[in-house]
Image (cartoon, rainbow, N blue to C red; front, side, top):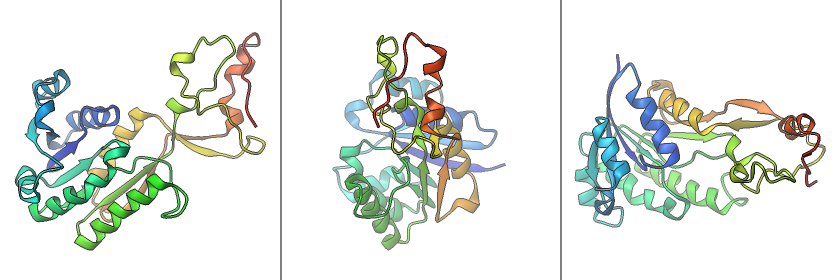
Length: 234
């Protein structure tokens, strides 16, 4: 039986909610704290977490390192799930985590694998955060995931599934028969918790995915709806 204090920054977001759900359902003695801004403390989604037994701790990523350190005291694991614009804010958060004695820091990755530098500006920033974590000698786990099912649905001429279409699912590279890893958001929550509770993943990179598919595989909906065929962009 594992007894662990875990703080989550971004617990009310889509990915964060799935992680919280899995932590609360865990057979282990996991004590979950949501790190939230003071301006968000009274929001319904935060109050819902509180009602489910999640502790609420106020934190200001723009505040002092000392205040952030106090907010993280007693936490053994910190999981950060931040929007793109706030990715760099993990640098002071990691510094505070080190000072607070956090034993594992899981920064915002949760995206398809990419080279460390030179291809994706967002990945470049995430690598800057990781390099800072390493300089601090702060224990970490890096979790990359497959491409999201939620961004994969192709548009149909009828528009019947437009609400679920991201606009990123119509393009095929090559002949569409190359296998790629895909992940459902719910699975991210499940596997992040497994990685967090597994001592073998400390200071390691972990890649999680639900299944391997090709772009042609994803087009199964086309033949099933001959009156509403998928139009791929090649």
